[in-house]
Length: 98
Image 1 (cartoon, rainbow, N blue to C red):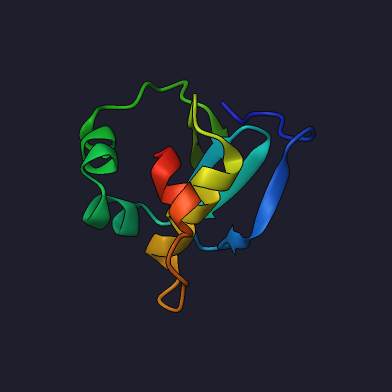
Image 2 (cartoon, helix red, strand yellow):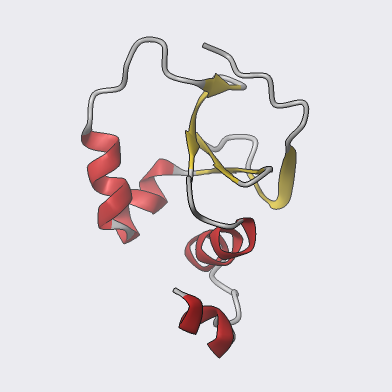
């Protein structure tokens, strides 16, 4: 089921046209790669092994996963650390919030 995302915005530095999954944190969308997420995150590895319902939410042909309880900035920092080899480490105040 394709979801209306007109009230949401893409995170341009974490929106890959060939990405395989779209994650939503607050009103921000991230189109990233399931392979990278499963390699570095046991949570996502387990999530992607679960069978998905036929009417699962999708956007642009990709599964849409809502990250309930995660704010957009924390999700951005986490995903950027996984997807950008030149990423500068998180500031201490960001790490302390986790």
